[in-house]
Length: 356
Image (tube, rainbow, N blue to C red; front, side):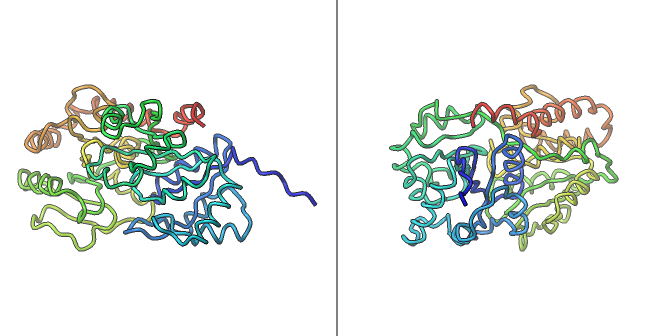
């Protein structure tokens, strides 16, 4: 009995250990007619995809031995066992044409360089000052530009071209997106005057972000700031009006919480990063304050009440908003409509068709 011939050009290996991003890209590529596969990514720091979630994202049936070898391989090890590496190279050669991965993980470059026909797409979420630590900018990649491509926002491309000397035609502009969350659309229904911030790994963020939150809380002593995010256990603020909550494992629970807050503040680990929380805010239609010069600012592109310049400016705007939010309903609705239309999955499928 003949085996069905595998069309590897329609198969994508997704090496993303971020639940929301993994779900989005798998759903989107499946809509494009591609098959997707995510291995059980080995633990690296605290970024791990739950195994039961990974199984939902797999639309490829591989041989049992292939599955076992992929799932047991540490893609973050820069000096992997040669036998294991050779097995994985052979599996990818036979089954995949495209790899999609994030710039914020140290995927083994030896793996990518060993597969001649593989196309590798790196996704940039923002301009991170730590980028020079990531292996995608090492000499091997610079020498092998023909097999590597970079997905980034236009406002980041100039500095990447200048900093890393990678040709402009290797950058593809397609934004990250969100999954089908239409059931949460326009569900904003605040029942308090509290303010929401979604930011993870507080122990790892730059001290300027911590100082920003502390200063804001001190300027607004009668307002409570609630922080949700992953891996924030053991981190505490001395300010009583800053409350850190346990991380949530259910996506729907997060939306149900977001919609009850009066407003949200977009704070990222670095200035130009665009995180999913801002897109989730736009779906629910909660007012979302963001900083001038940030990634969100590059999308909305107009000066408006919800854009702030510094901590004192934000503190004054928060107080004004809480006094009479009806004055700012139009700008809130307009900003969120721009962001949501920009990021929703259906609007991105056509953009990705041009690439893949």
